[in-house]
Image (cartoon, rainbow, N blue to C red; front, side, top):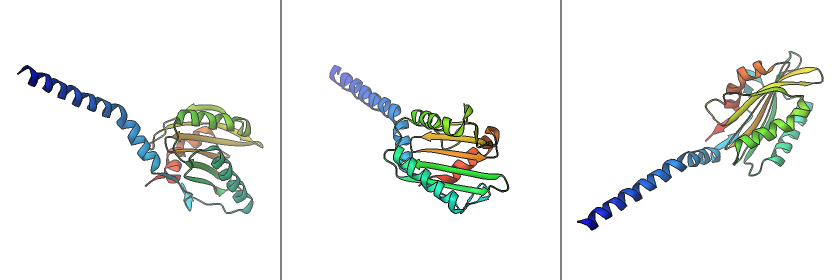
Length: 187
């Protein structure tokens, strides 16, 4: 009888220990699975704006893709494009890459730090990343006297940037979740 009780207790403890381990790692496993299914795309339109095919802007987009590919280890897809019309002061630039990110917060901080000097970033604050999760922040920028609304994000499967020319942080933040969901896809 004592042996049966001891065995029953051991089985409960082993089962409970296994369950405790499962609950401790299931979120990490789920994030890793989502990360492996993440890819970046450049849709034909972005939040109602047509893709801009100006050769000069396309060269800049190609350079952005090369740059992000060189900084993201384990990159599985990368994107860089412009949308809208600069003459109508409605231009959006996107760039991003997918791949397994071990520390999304560190990736986001590195992206913001790297962009701060180039885009004159200020007022960067954490924002809701939306249903795709991860870490996100938006702020104001300035380049060649053109105001910018800038949002960045990083999660376990991607890192990206949205720059809205002739805009502010509030404008970029208002469209951030919509734009991100159009360029970051999960299979």
